[in-house]
Length: 236
Image (cartoon, rainbow, N blue to C red):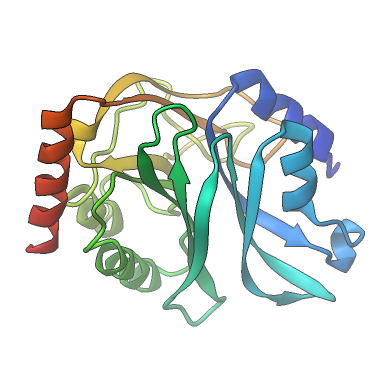
């Protein structure tokens, strides 16, 4: 927001929060406007995390899209195309294996755009893509949709959306007036919520970062219940 593209600053903010997983939107890969930098790779190096990039489209000699960072090994990743007319969109998914427990989860980064109709179609496609997932799923990003919208209402039927507290507005970062960025997860029984809040950071991005701290259940019975809950979602 100070007209400076500063990946070192962005990495410093990420590192200060010590996250295991990070969803990043509006990432360039060797485009002219960002001096042909592979931003995902640079941020991965600066944070000492595994990085994957998913493109929306070709742009200025490179590509424009999203990225995911993970402290834990990424078994594989895939960039799924979402419907849209104004500008191409996708869902970037990574199967992550917890380094110490071996538990797997699916981490999904999104940036929905642009009309309400397009975003609703993109949300429905997300539901369909994740319908048969048999591991816990975390869905994070810029939904460009407020909590009372049809988009978020649809996703609320398939993912748990933690409350961020009173300071819940995420955009614009300098003087926020709406909540459009979320981290959702399913099934509810697979995780314990330890913290959910918005980070006050007005300069590094036009959105304020969202922080969610979860504890992954290691209880076998809860794990079974998680699988049953996921299967139940697939039948809706």
